[in-house]
Image (cartoon, rainbow, N blue to C red; front, side, top):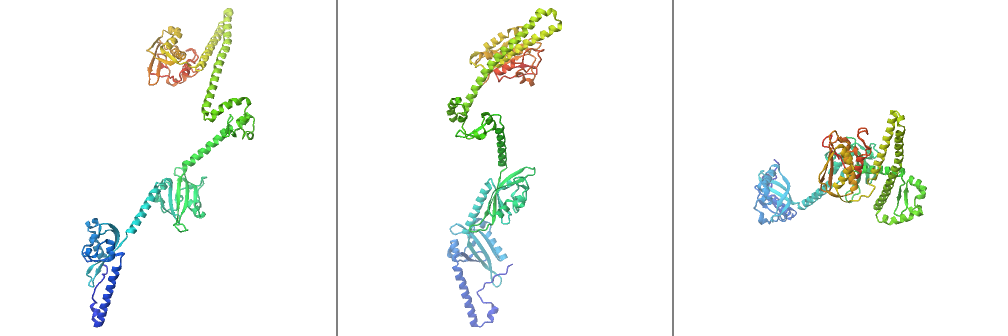
Amino acid sequence: MAKPRQVSKEVPAVAAAGLRGEERARVEEALRESEESLRLLVESVRDYSIIMLDPMGIVKSWNPGAQRIKGYRAAEIIGQHFSVFYPEEARLRNWPQQELAIAREAGRYEEEGERIRKDGSTFWAHDILTPVFDEKAALRGYAKITRDLSARKHEEDAQRETEERFRAVVNSANEGILVYDRQLVITAGNLAAERIIGLPLAELIGKPGFTSLLRCVREDGTPLPPEERPTRVTIRAGRSLQGQVVGVTRADGSITWLSVNTAFLRRAGELDFYGIVATISDVTARRAAEDALRESEERYRRTFELAGSGVAHIGLDRKFIRVNRRLCEILGYAEHELIGLTGREISHPGDLDVINAQRPRLYADEIDRVRVEKRAQELERSNAELGQFAYVASHDLQEPLRMVSSYTQLLLRRYGDRLDGDAKEFMAFVVDGATRMKQLIEDLLAYSRVGTRSKEFRPVAVESALRRALMNLKNSVDESSASVSYDALPTLEADELLLTQLFQNLIGNALKFRSASVPRIDVFSKEKEHEWEFAVRDNGIGIEAQYFERIFMVFQRLHNKGEYPGTGIGLAICKKVDPSISCWSRTTRATSA
């Protein structure tokens, strides 16, 4: 137990026994003056509440400071229990009495907490409770000193709220933030720093920077020496650091590239710094994009320089900015001669009218349309030339073939009795080859003509086109005793000639590649949401699935000419008439198109 404080208004008996009457009176007078001075001192204190409690906690004295802080006048509070100053929650758990017990046992009790004023408002108090004992060590009561710390508490709460708000803002940042002290030891950081660096803050705090914990490299991939760590560079240079790139080598060998900025931390009015703050950004994706862009630009530069066509960059003033080697060769100018010239200056006078006619549209942002129209004109001219070439070629090629076939047959008629069997067989091969060549040329001509003529769409009865195709194939149908059936067919907007050609080739293909059974061919249609689907089904030899695409290519035959005749162009014509045509099979040997 702490040594009790003794308070008594009487002079101790031992001292009084040795004093004469005058001396005793003088001592007592001095004691009264001392007590009066103490009372005046207590009553003059206005910033502190100084009160006396009896051993049970009843208020026995009250000073002006107590009235100012707690709102009670002395007459209102003396005689009441001091628990009225405590919140209800503290009173319910009998905390005021516990404070008295602790103070008596320990000799002193001190705490900060919420207290209640007379008007019910609360304030933040700093209480010191001290027990008072007499000369016989008997408890006389308690001295209780209270200071109102509401202003300080408000400031602390405001500062704490500001710090929490600042921390929330820092933690919401996308950039990592690390705070270092003067010894360059990490003292704080945000969540983004954990994510970017790849280490929890618990492992970073107290360490001399992340570069000391991880394998770091320079931009060129060489190890980062300690003297080049961003914070050390900042101290050595005496100024902030912007954009130092540091690579962090991960366990899998990959490198995360970080951009680090630093700045000194200084208090207001002070020149010396107390720490350094570093912001860290993950620039791995940006560097990858920059590398890809550089690579792309390099490829473009090489392509530009080595292109087989002439290529130029032209400015808004219509002058050449950059030209490649091939353009210089085409135009017959050196590169330095073309730079700064306009297309008009190097154009032939006879072409200026055409150029001038297209220029307004080009400048009106119709470049793509002009290009498309020009391309369409070129294609139209090319198709016309191809059609004319195919016609001329077929005529010029068939003429010598007719001569070969005619004269070979004439030789057989006139001199056949003089030829042995081998000679006659050889001449038959010549006639057969000429005949097949003639058929091939005619098929090529037909293939080349598909798509070159303008498609004249008009209402067409599909059944009519099918009947015309069957009429053209009458001899083949009769020869094979084939049966051709079809459902009711619709009337559609179509090119009747091409539709007939399509059915003729499909049904002709079914008749040619028939099995040992009597050919049975079905033609049917099905209406879909925005289109009609037509199908030709037969019981022929079938097509394996791996050849479904090949059979629509020119000259792609699956059988030799000895097994089945033909040039391999029929289905290619079908594909050219309708690119959406396809082949399907219910079984491996079923055929349909």
